Image (cartoon, rainbow, N blue to C red; front, side, top):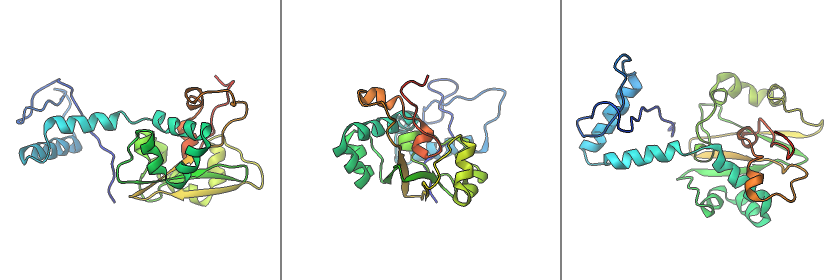
Length: 222
C-alpha cells in the first residue's frame, strides 16, 4: 500500500555535497540511518537518470513540509461560513479544496459531517493513511496499533480517553481510510460564533476535531 510519508534529512546547504551537487546535512558523530541512506541513494539515482532535478526534489520536500492542520482548518472555517461551499465540500471534497487553492493530488477526499445525531471518527486500520495534504504529518497515536484496533471495536471508549463524551443516543461512525481515499471530519460549528470571520473561525478548529477524536475550541476558550 503506497504512502506519502517520508523520513528525510534536508540539509538546506549544510554539510557535504552529494555527487550531483545536491546538499544534505550529515552529523559527523551520528551515522546515517538505513532510511537516510536509502533516501540519498534514490534521490541521486533520480537525478542521475534525469527523472527529476535537485531543485524539483527540494521543491517537493518544501511543499510537503508546508502542510499543516492550518490548511484543514481553513477548509472547515470556509464550510462553516459559506453554506454553498459546505454543500460542495460534502459532495466532492477534493474539488472543493481545489477551489481554495489547496491541492489534494490524485487522492479522493471524502468529508463527513458531525451533526446532532452522529459523530464521525477517522482511522486507518491497516497502516497510517491520513489526509496529510490538509493536516500534515499524522500524530504518533494515530499510527499506533492500539488506536487502529480499538477505534473500530470500542469507539466510545477511545473518545472518552481523548476527553470526548457524547450524549446517549448519538451514533458514532468510524471511517477507515485507504491508500487512495482519505477522510476529513467536518466538526459541528460551535455555538456563539455567528459574528466571527473565517480567520477567527479557523483558529477554533483543532487537528483532532478534523480526525474526530476532539472537538473545536469554544470562542471564549484560551
